[in-house]
Image 1 (cartoon, rainbow, N blue to C red):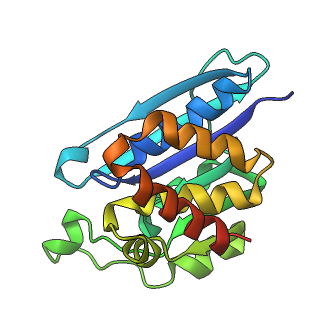
Image 2 (image 1 turned 30 degrees about the vertical axis):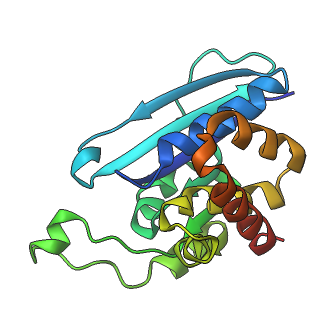
Length: 191
């Protein structure tokens, strides 16, 4: 199998690190070599978080270069736009429709870009997911990350059972039911 390159991006506190842990667990259980690298920046202050995940028969480095990502899973629109140069031609972006103002927007130094969705669509196949809305429907807004994984699972080639098993192995028991519900809502939205 050729190497698959996935970037997961968002803002600190959105659960990107749990998402990559779940995905890494799945592909490792499937027998693939997996490499992960995380870039946190000012993540604890609402800044960007980017994680690279590569898997395949043999992976030598976790870093994904410009034009190499097969998929970008973005938890926020502006973060998807920031990572767009890393997407390969013909790649896919799965993006939460949520907008979180970065510090320059909060302070009034800049405006949040108004046409992100059309810019993304001009360069890639884009699946926009109402992850926060679906997470609230599941019963906990903090499960938006798992909603996005569900949407990713619906369009991928990894069996759904593998995703469910990974959730059961990585999510604390007291949060498992709400996360399973969030995953199912995300999966249904991605079909």
